[in-house]
Image 1 (cartoon, rainbow over the protein chains, first blue to last red):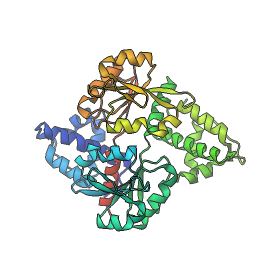
Image 2 (spheres, one colour):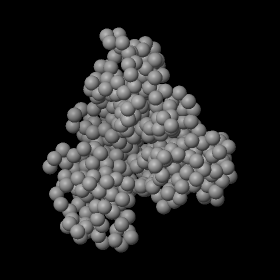
Image 3 (spheres, chains in turn cyan, blue):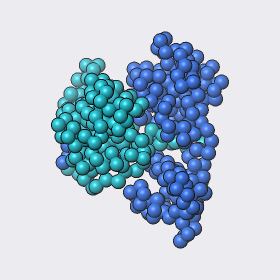
Image 4 (tube, helix red, strand yellow):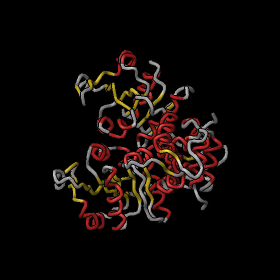
Length: 206
Length: 206
């Protein structure tokens, strides 16, 4: 399989959602033109993205929505459930536990961590908050493969290093800081302010 | 000025943060090599990004950290304060009100909206929650230029349309749905699950 760009992967996530919605509406087939139209991109881009993975549909007949959704889901690893740890149970952390979209796509928080002794030991949404010192024991027991980092910037590197030392290799990081990791570890950064800055840039050019 | 790509704008935001941190550490100058090293990208990329805006520094001497931060801040529109509305005061909305990074970069929530009559009229973090029906009156009074949308997917289009009808042209959208807008309106989507799917894709390829 060819090396697939981050932007293609991100568009596959978008197509997956489009297909989920079409299936809810009992649609059996869909064309690349319609998928393009719904997402405001070109149909050439849609067909190019699909071409990375071989042909899903038949020319003129369109794609079967369920087959296409399952094929994309399999590529994205959404055909399985993922056990996810959350480090940092502050405001953002708590909002993430409730973020319905994670559950829908198969990402389940199964372990919570914090260092605040006022929170450690408490139960939030049915899960006990553990101290970060117990990270290796808990992540192994709970079979954690992904960790979401919602701790302050000044401790984010240290917290991610702890997870890496226990074998966790995939992170979604909300701390506004660049994290250094070994080559076989992937960190995706979610800095919500950066998208706002793209808006202020846009407004400033007017 | 040349058309600047979204990824360049996003990297400028990253450099801005790097410079903020260096200034906190009382650093007076920095090289493009060091900015590159801190952010795990090539120094050629850093110099290319800077070249869009003319020269900030002197070869061999590096860049003055304050001058460079101010120049990038001005490009990104971070030299002013932005009045931001928040629509949807649920879990995510509440976390966003507290999101320190927004305030640091000059984005201030100055108007809150919801449709839940149990919330409308209440005060959250010193701001009254307004009904979305009052959106035009309030956004004009509060001089709102950006709206953050944290409402459920099924009402997001409608809520954004309301803001557009009052002249708001820039949106940060947390609802997991593609929004249709006129050409002079910019929507940045923040779907936190899409980054997780990039992680599950990565783990699935191993």
